[in-house]
Image (cartoon, rainbow, N blue to C red; front, side, top):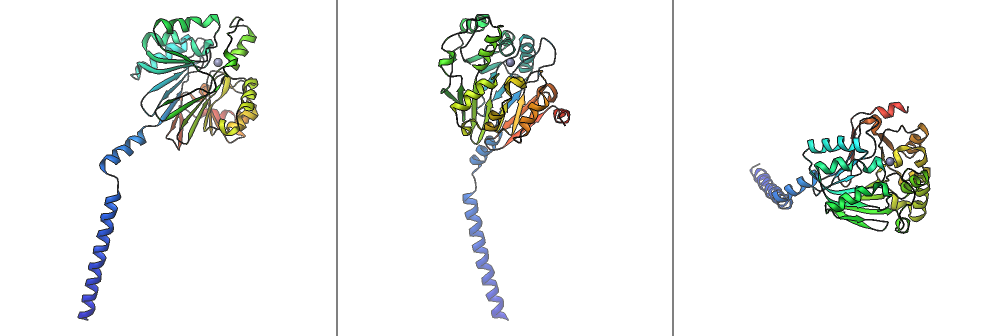
Length: 318
Ligand SMILES: [Zn+2]
């Protein structure tokens, strides 16, 4: 019995040494406190996109998307009509945002740019990007940007820039489409169509996540884009619904190429049930600011989180 007890003790001791050795190895390979801080900060640095809901009145309307990049820089894509610009500016300032690193004009129409006059009174801008396609009615915007010495860069298909780890690719318009400026009045119907069809298609890539900002592109331009790019190049997790959800921008083939998991429609227009179902048919959950209120999307590079003020739109289309 004594012999067996000794054997048991020696075995137990050996086990302890092996286990403690394993523990030590585990400790050696576990992250240092510095690594833990890095991991912690990585978790906090998401790409955050805020699709603005502008209160529904005649003088407040249009698109406005505020983006916070993982490196801390920010971007504003469009700023609605003048009344919307005042409302959004007030909201940004209330959050302590007094500088925009990148101001992007998707195209020069009142519901995307006129809020600039309110914004620039309160908030400084580091860089402006636009398609450069502009009627004389909106020249005041570019003149003001020039007067303030804000760098303005015209971007067209093939251009890209990075903000930290996020790559922004310009997929549309092509350079030849914006090589000549419009000669018609901004309110002329043909000019409206031309300007919308020359608005930006921007693809944001953050590790495994993609966001597609589609401005006011009509079906016609979307078809040209489908001829220019493979579906893989257009695929995105989240897509801004083009042209406020109007039927003239609901394109089945384009939606199928992008196959978004989530889509967000801005503006006070009510998308038809047919339009809504086009998105639903590819498994996309669509939000609309006219009913959901403000919509936020957070990308961590792999996963996406979407939340809104309320979920009413889905009941509306049921
Ligand atoms: Zn618009």
